[in-house]
Image (tube, rainbow, N blue to C red; front, side, top):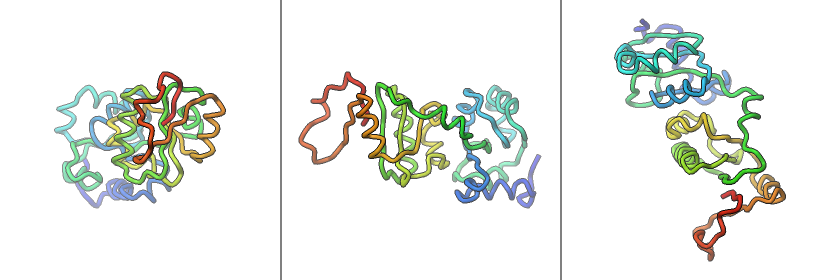
Length: 212
């Protein structure tokens, strides 16, 4: 069991609270039972899997799944887990996972021909993005596009707020205006929202393929 906050592995993991370090190492920080379970359900690879004894006893099935797909498994004390987590009250589990590879990212991009899509521009709050991802997945959306000046799609708060749907919803970062024109050329209805618009969205014909 890792109990020392000065342990080299613990120090290295603590660095990953910084987005700069996550980008440098091309990794995701997965915190909480929901995210670990969602990653296991889609067989997403885990580089380092950290858990407390209490968490293992509470979630034995998720534990067995996680250790089967993790390269490195570490039993840690509650104090160590709290020191490497970015959340104030971690629930006893954390993992480091690789960013999607180029081919995985390409495979998970939304298709050009979809029934329902979401496009977001200059969205800065990670909690809001995670909530939109979760809601879009629940509504049966086929994918989500995000402008480059929006919050980082792999931000830990985005991952947590998505309640695991981050692994399931196709997403891509794009030039929004160009993508909107491209989708319209493909026959999609592209709907922009505005608080001062004269047309209410209940008046739209939404049975045709639409991107909001």
